[in-house]
Each structure stands twice: as structure tokens, then as C-alpha cells.
Length: 330
Image (cartoon, rainbow, N blue to C red; front, top):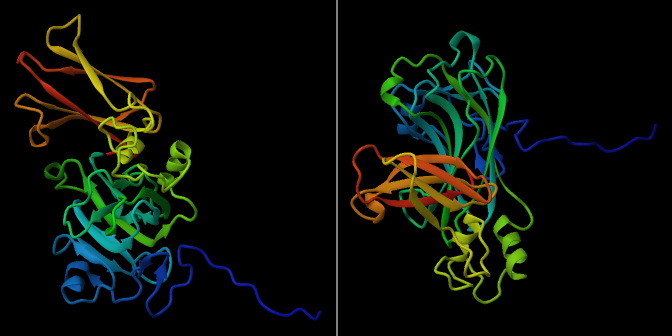
């Protein structure tokens, strides 16, 4: 009796999509509902794919009304190595969360030999560069053939933008393949819907790290491209590696030795930090970046030290190694 007013309920996933330009966080047209259905390639070519850009083949993606998580439409990708993407202006050093729902119907269930999978990808571009910054590529968990059919499954990915002045973020909705040539008989499809990109509030991970190590976010020598302890490693590199920026003896380094039980194996060791993933690169021609080939990736940290045994076969000679570190998987 006498009750007045109203209560509104909503969520970041855009529970109710408007007929005009809809948004979810920093993402426009988050459910593919602001345009007409049809072939993604044709819609992109005719400027009928609001906010999104199709990077794929002529018959590999569609805006469809057969299945949707919310609204009336969703994106369906039908072939590996095809991507739907949207860009947004990002702030350097700030953490972003991208999320969405993926779905496979029982009548067209996604299937592969395990080398193909759906996922969300978040990448960042610095300035006008057309190539993403290599240390700022983030992936969600994988939507594999083992996922149940007829069920929308939530996926998310968190990543930090490079500490640069002009940064562009990009969300990719894709079916990725480790073996494109072997996936010609891929069966089934994956739908994407209810996408969102949100900037995390409060202090970023980088700023928290600055406060923890320097007691300030703007003290002299504490910027991302400065070297506070003068050990030759920028503060940003030490942030990624998990080393101490105030100790000139703390930085990512590696050593090698011949395995005693084998004349064809080298043992590579390096100090490791929890929450990191490492890659081992090797070259027989020189230490330059263009000479290195990756021999192992996604090596989970085993603090305080990681050990990798590299079998070089019978070609015994001088080898050069590089250890790369990331805070997310390759």
C-alpha cells in the first residue's frame, strides 16, 4: 500500500538490446542485433555490419537468427582461421576484460581432431602499427569439441594494454586452428553472442606493482620505459617477468649445460616466477631476433627455477637460446 517508484535490472551482457545502436561496456553492437542477417563477407563489403569487421572467407561466417543467446541474432563461424573483430580506443597500462558466450547446436555440433577450437582473443596495437604488440596478446579458454551442445557457455579473457600513449584494443571472435591444412574436414559450427569489453576500475595491475615496489606511480625512474635499478631491463620488462626492479641483480637470465647422460641434449635453466608462462627459442646462426625459432611454449612456471632439456640430435654445434616470458599463455 502506498508503494511508489520502480527498480531496474540489467547486466554487462546487454540483457535487452535496443533497435538503435546498442553497446556493452566499450563494445558496440555486442549481440550482432543492430544490422540485418546474412553472409558476413557480403555484409562487411556492403557496410551492413555495424561496428564489426569480418576477416575471413566468402562463405565462412554469417549473422544468423537460428540460435541466439540474447536479442534476435548471433554470429556463426563455420570454418577455422576466420575472425570477426571490433576495435576500441584503449588507455595504456589499463586492464580490460572481454567476455561473451559460445554455443554449438546438436544438429551441427562442432567437431575436430582437437587442433581447432573457438575462443575470444584480445590484442592491442600501438600507434598506427598494423601488427599487434607481441607481449599483449591474450586468449580465453578454448571451446573444443568436448563442450556440450545446445548450451551457451560463458568465456572471458583479461589483459593489460601496453603502456603507450596511443593504443587500440581489438576483440576477435574466431575459430583458431593449430593445423589449418589438416582441418579441411572440420564438422560443425560455433556461435558467438552477448559480447562485452569492460575497463577494470580502480588501480591497474601495473600501478599496483609500481606502488608495491616504488611506493609511488610517478616517482623519478619508475615509468614503464625507465630502468630504476640500472640493470639493463626496463621497469615494464621486470613487471612482466616478475623480477625486482629495485635490485640490479634481479632480472630474467638463463644458463645452459650439457646433459651428463646424453651428448645430444642441452639443459636450459632460468629463475622463474609464479603466474608466468615461458617459451624457449633457439638459433644456430646467431642471437638476432630474426634468427630465433620457438622450440617450446606455454611452459608453466615452477618457482624458483625452470628446467628445459633440448634434444638437438646429432647436429652438435654452437646454439643460441632466448627465454621469453608472458603473464598469459601463448
